[in-house]
Image (tube, rainbow, N blue to C red):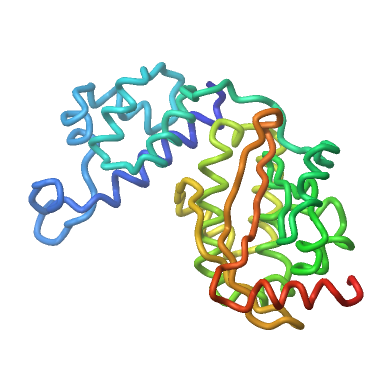
Length: 278
């Protein structure tokens, strides 16, 4: 396990430990007023490990933690399924080995052809969340995608640095929080790579809001959900966001915005795309 992953694992454990509500675990306050946070010795006792060993784990020491022990600690910390998967990934226990692939500049031709057959916005996302392909409907929704510099054509980067896109998102605070938590969960063991570290560093310097959300260490699995855009020409557009993973290109994710039935989104998109393209 790399040093970066060990340190991330340790900090993640500490953040979750100090924010646990003691009463929810049947524990009394510490002193008169401290109702949040468990001591390291309490976590160690519940997880049946030594205090010294658990302390070393939080400190990012070079020690081996079995899957069973990490799962036991996850139960004590009442981690969600996504948080548990993230913890295991940091410990080196992933369903498939972490690869060094981080960036893909262009989606394969057959996936681009699939995107082009869709009449609603869709795009392909690389492991570093670089946008590797998109269709005409997505360009209609987000007109800057064709002209943005390739080095900045990254979904996470654009969410935090493009004021045009931010103005289109009435729920920007909630959306940005979801994105950061989902990115952390998906990146998992790749967070120790130089490419991911560089992206996080750039974003942290460019956006105070990103830096704060990243420091919170939220972890979420992707979930299909409603997305609302305020388009400068078409007005309010309401979609359902879905994602597919191609079996022959699992390093890419296809993100699709399907118009919500019962809204005028489908009609507005047809009108938007019938005019001159931006």
